[in-house]
Amino acid sequence: MIHNSEGNGAPLIRGGRWLLAGWSLFLLAGFALTTFVSPDPRGFGTHQQFGLPPCTLRLLTGVSCPSCGATTSFAHFVRGEWPSAIRANGAAFVLACLCAVQIPWSWMSIAKQQLWLITRPERTLIITLVCLTSLFVLQWMFWMLTGQN
Image 1 (tube, rainbow, N blue to C red):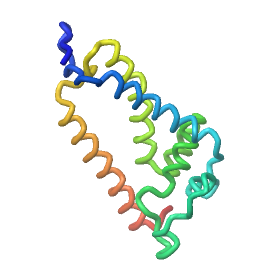
Image 2 (image 1 turned 45 degrees about the vertical axis):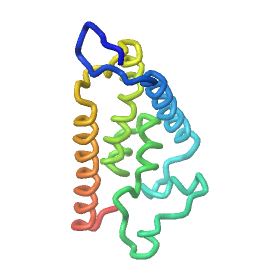
Image 3 (image 1 turned 135 degrees about the vertical axis):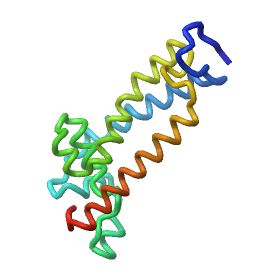
C-alpha cells in the first residue's frame, strides 16, 4: 500500500493506479461509443443501433424495464442534451453523471496515489449501488403507476 501524507483518502492497493487508469479509459470508451448512435426519438430503443435486440420485457408484456431508455439517455447526455436525457431515463442520467465524474476522479486518485476523498471505498460503493438501484426501481414504479415510458 502507498500512503500519502495528505490523508484525505484510502491508500491505493497494489496495481490500483492501473485499475483506475483502465476504468477511466473504459468509461471514456463508453461515452465515445454513444456518440456513434442517434438518440431514438421514442425515448428508448437506441441500443438497437448497436445490433442488440429490443427490450424483451417490453416485447413480451408491453411494459418498460427499469433500464429502458438508458442508452438513449446516455446518447443525449454526451450531446449535452440533458433535459432529453432526463426524460429518456432520469436514473440513467444520474448514472451518466456519476460515470463522467469518475473519469477525472480516477486521474486525481492516481496523481495523489490514494482514493481521492474516499476513505472507506467499500462503504462508498455499497451506498452508491443501493442509491442507484433504488433510483432505477423507484422510477420504474412511477412509470408503472402513471403509464409513462
